[in-house]
Image (cartoon, rainbow over all chains, first blue to last red):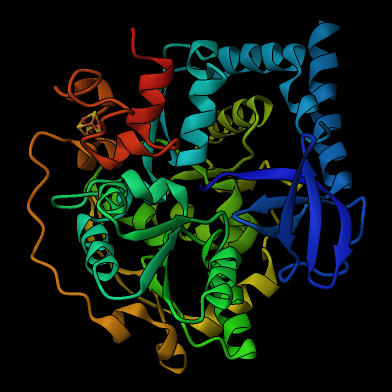
Length: 75
Length: 361
Ligand code: SF4
């Protein structure tokens, strides 16, 4: 129940959206996030989008980790 | 899928494990507070990737597990009233109360329906105007804003047959209670989704007052290992602080809209946690303005004081003092099909997780 999963918004209808998580479609309330549009990634929790997922931040973290990986590889 | 696969990259996992091995100079114990983390840690076999020197213990972050028997007893009392429907998250129906469960009451004829969101419970109220719908509000800062949104919605639509029995809770006071109990830990793996709502700043008092490190992390293996590495480094440098590993979802200030909903509808109250007892300011009750949606106020369900838990040691497990393997009933008399305590019911419960992944150790 306390699980939140990443999902992508498929369509928006007022403050409700259809979102897809690993191919399964769920309904999600958009009351807590602003300017949501199809294609945005969100965290789905108990029927609500509780936060947008930031692609830039995700890339940044991965880049940092990969750099760490590369420096290890070259040792 | 994006935001999942990259964080399950085998090579990255092995490199992180190598880095942790190198950095770990002595023994470390970290507590993962969130039940979602407990479940992910065992599902991905994280303990087997860590050096023996690093121990991860679970804390009080499974909302179903910390819910007291009295809450279940109250729901059962409400379910016995005329025309009442309990519209609940599925996790709750098998949690043992003092003498029954919602599931058993349903088998005896009580109207208990499973919903996947609070909005769906409100929908049930709209579709059944002749019934009184009660939604059991369980969960932390991640779930409570959804209840707040729904109550606001209900007010707007003038739906008058929908009520909430709130056992919503907030995490930071429970973490403080754990520290005060004297559990021997070197830092917290902080709940990523709670922090997505609250922001990282609610944990600042932990390094500030108690000199313990905090890393807020995601739920994939790369996230968890990265957090462990960050905590080891904090400990090695003796520089406890709040760090965000889960940058893709967590900011310092969190989700301000959700926080606004929470503070408009709820106010803090003292709350009972299984294993921890009553923790001041750790619960959320409906504000006076929303009293008419409060099932506690409207129905005042009467119950007998619940008895103690017998041989079940969920309480000590939730405080990080024992592990499921220490319980004499574990995997013998208590199994997911026949749970004795709440920790065996929920998918995020420590006993349930151990049963699934570590039973044969
Ligand atoms: S194994 Fe069952 S009885 Fe033992 S602590 Fe866990 S839930 Fe309680």
